Length: 261
Image (cartoon, rainbow, N blue to C red):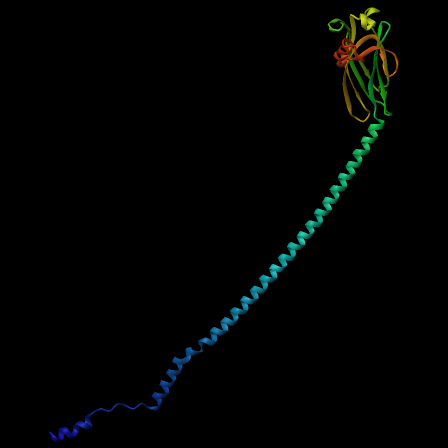
């Protein structure tokens, strides 16, 4: 037993001491494990690179915006200039048109041909119907149609009618023609004894020489001769002959009320 007890301490195992080679491997391994600590430098490099890319992108976008603004301003300037030029041209054209129109109106007003009814007039047993031309330009065309009729007075109930008379002239100048009518009593030529009257009614149209055509209607009724004393003229005035049909009723009213015509 004593021998066994003496052998016990020697028989116990002691932990192995690391050799120099083992320590070198451990240090190497530790260095390798510590190598990831260099990653922050890479991250800073990437961040710096990304920062420069963002800056370049911003500058390019800003330059593009500036170029776009300059182009838009230049386009607006061109548009305004073109609009001003167009407005000026339009105003000049309008002014020229107005001047041309005014000049034409002045020329037409002073030189154009114009026809007015001249008559009718009772001459013996005929009725003269005519038109007087005015203006410096000859009319290239004149056309008229009318009838002459006899009617009771003052009711104007027709008792006789002529054929339709027609006048066509090209070019046209003054017109004066006489047209025969049935017997017209001498008493009917005096208003106080008048029982019958003459009516001339028709239309006419003409070209004024500048391509403008005018159309007119006319109606005339015969009044027998009558006299009245003109207060302001201090004398006796004799009137009669053809009057516009539209004044017939007013004329009759004046005579019934013994008013001056």
